[in-house]
Length: 56
Image (tube, rainbow, N blue to C red):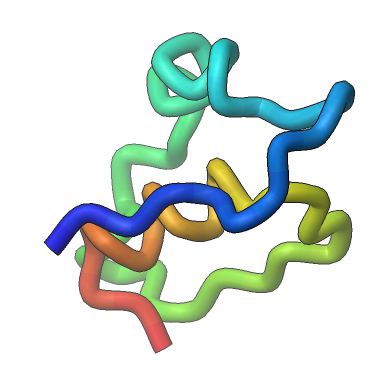
């Protein structure tokens, strides 16, 4: 299932998502099982993490 941000936002990260994904920690989804999104915005990074990793 693919989830997309629900708000189109000038400061959104959708266009930068590939660059941001390259910076994800290698342990994400393995030994890292929690994710906190302090700046929800449109949710591009949050939705990418939730749809691609086993995160609480």
